[in-house]
Image 1 (cartoon, one colour):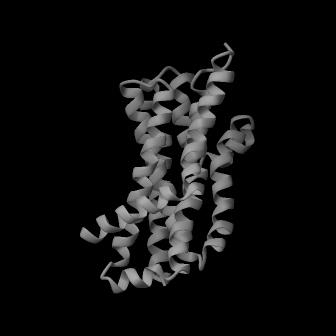
Image 2 (image 1 turned 120 degrees about the vertical axis):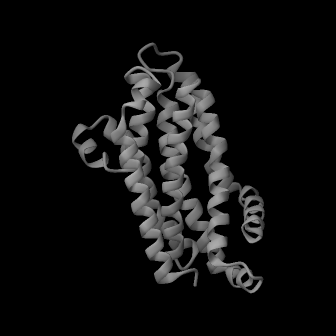
Length: 238
């Protein structure tokens, strides 16, 4: 536990000293705010939460996967992991510490999205639960890619296709029903459906009846955990 806390503190400081990473966590809430105030609020035909939910689902898919994959790959490339192991830090402790940083850092944008969407009560709780379940899934995928990557450049190249598909597919599927039939198996698509249910079918009570999205998100997360376990058993953090 002490090692996990040490890794968490170190990586939290390092993460937010990195301007590129910091922008990843700020840009999507900022875009949501601007689009909401300049477009949605001024248009009676667009729900005020439309851009909030859209940017929230894109954030889960796009921002997190390259970030965490890059963190792990960079530590492997710079041999930082060797020093950590020599200092008595076990690889599982390292991974839990890194994952904890991403979860904690993602909580702030999630709260920002929730407040911008003016969700309250049950809506807010479901919104946060949905967002954080997506964060867990993306964290597992990012860790897996980081383990498979030999360096930061490889991690970026490998993670970006996944990030683009998971981030933008739900938005495209909104306007393309045939594509929805394919993307409905993705956790980010189901996150988008749950979040949009707040304004499309009558608030959080409707979201409570959407068992399929939560089931798909759960299955996606379970599969990604299995994939991560396999990757770690095969390559570790060498």
